Length: 439
Image (cartoon, rainbow, N blue to C red; front, side):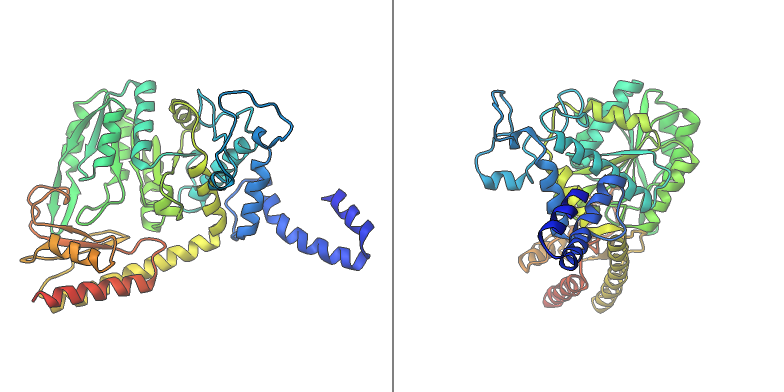
């Protein structure tokens, strides 16, 4: 920057040059700060700053060297400029064949980008509620596949053969466990008023008879399922020296959920916490952030990944974090909480009109309303045709309630981070119209 300033001062009048340098510094300063500190910035960066950072880094990779003789089988060649733009210029991907976060000789810029992303994402998780985590990594895998990778790591390090899993009616985690070659030990749930909760006594019994097991708990799922008691489980795991994974899929957006996870880490054993990039940070689907209070375990998780990886989910997560910043994320959290309150109020109003009720379930993102005596699946299909995406309609007693024979049909509506007030208003208005038309 000093050399650039001297060149500018040589070419144009000093007063003009100094004014131009101030403007240039306002553009470059935040980018320099990200590279120097590798922290989640307080203020968001502009699209121009993010693009400039990514182009700067990707230009360091060997495929940008126009005078190089590239004769390898993998040289970052792409079919068109469009393909390169879709990859943000990181055509070599990230990692090496034996370690997904290892520096790659042909990809100096991508290697630097990945290290910056890991540091920024880990700092974001700390600032947003988990200061007691020591290390983290952004993986080019969605949540279910990240569960598989972490489970495989626990198998390799600790000889884990089974995963004790409080019931969640969701296929991805179970398939991730199976992919890692481990057996699922199901823990049943119990019904407490409207809420479906983990049977903690059955969980304790499963742990007492499974010496080669780890535990997978869940913080966020659809009502009527409530969060697992992760603090109590962490204490059990510490007492029995049992590894413990927390699936915190979309929990970062909730201050309360992050407080639960923080208390679990403080109180007992938590090996890894997995959160979705898209559900929490508004990036495209395909990435996740894995953090741990055990620094060495994160290194082992990265080492378990087979081969190099696409850079796309990593660079997209970095861009999303920089575009939001801490202040922007605080605003999104506030907006999410406000929309959740609005959603519940609107559903209560609708329920009273049609002799139904809102289920009393602790959930920071979603609400559920009974549909007793109504065709839940038909309602869900009609809402989809009316351009309402996201509701989850479940018939009485069917799979999806995380318990056998749940006594209500119901519909779940979400007010997740990034949703707008107008989305909640439109969805609930169309829901009301559909229900009234069928009376």
